[in-house]
Length: 482
Ligand code: GDG
Image 1 (tube, helix red, strand yellow):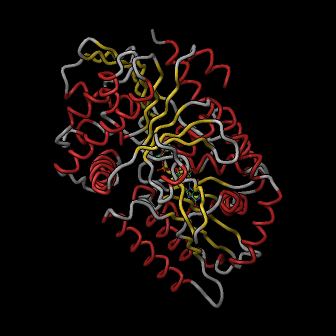
Image 2 (spheres, protein in one colour; image 1 turned 90 degrees about the vertical axis):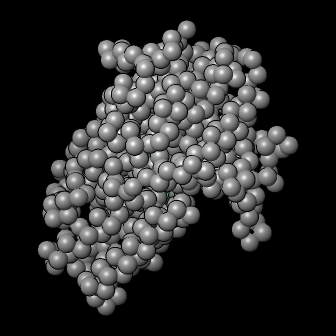
Image 3 (cartoon, helix red, strand yellow; image 1 turned 90 degrees about the horizontal axis):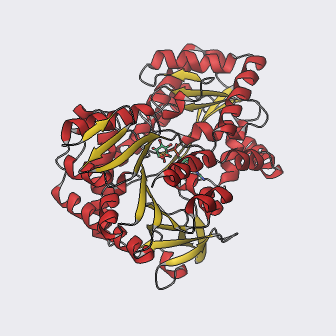
């Protein structure tokens, strides 16, 4: 990886720009802590940045972030093995409110995910979004100057940045990776600022999506909304004389690292502790691990578990489902409503089916450390990913990477990008509650041989298509540009 980067960069700077930072510094009981956010993007890029040793520009969102950064907002990371620089961009409360909670997460997020939540378009959010994209452009331009550089922009928070960068730093090569789905033109066309967004994105030399389907949706959208020439054969768009290549790069996880960490003694010890604490001694365990987001289909999953318990009373007392849902975007009304709905459902199902000390659902609504996470993956007879719509879904790939024992069954929503690659999973439709209840029973009853054969094949796929391949493919493409 390092060699590839060095060869491709030919002395140019490598800069990653994202909203979320890879480590958030906070003070807990007076102690300084560096937390890893529950963000698929931040977790995936951290190992890549360790290998490349470049610069990462991101919003400094922790209450102790300023304490550890220098006058330019910079510090070296990761804390235990400093190998790259993080430059923090500081935002006011109003900017965060309008740009992050407002336009990015109340307009663009529901617009791009088909989860039947209506996007909210507010003029003042859009203004903050433009303002913050400009701040990020300033921060990057300050580092690059007039020199040639590779800038790798992440996600829907920064759709205007590629164009702003091209104007400020014409010698920069810019790639943007869109981590969420791109909807079809019918859906996208309701956005009042659709042409500004497309104009911003087409400042990129390369625009990446997880799967071909999202690339095609993007090309169709541009075809409908702009005076641009899509070249379907080359999968590129020529707009105002410049070409943007549209490519799919399915993101993944650091397979080797997860495989190694999940096999450690600390994880085995934690598994035992968890069994004791949660009263899971002789029970079959299912797990679900998510950011608490309405796109992840957590209520649908709970309803299917309820139905399963109705249909298969034999499993009462012998089965438990552990749902981890890390609170997320709590300033957005829709997310508060989701948490209330999940709380109520867990309560209702446990009341309905529970008996004595046995409760079928163990609900954990806080952030867990990686050892805890791996212990849950290893304890599980099955992992249930029931997203209503998901760009990729890294939990599915992490579960597979953590199962060095070749055990465990993956139940995976057909509406995730991951379902295109993880063919040996049991493919589910989270809207079909009765069918999902039967598939849960199928996962629990699957014979050992079939389970192991499926898991071995899944592991081969994730081992081969790991996060380094994702990054290397993008960097190689960047290197081939003139
Ligand atoms: C976006 C796209 C795409 C969760 N709870 C804890 C914890 N997590 C970690 C998981 C996983 C990550 O959070 C979630 O990643 P996903 O990929 O599932 O989802 P999004 O955050 O929505 O990510 C998605 C991704 O970008 C990458 O392109 O796959 O489609 O929506 O890594 O393990 N981590 C820890 N404690 C927790 O309690 N440590």
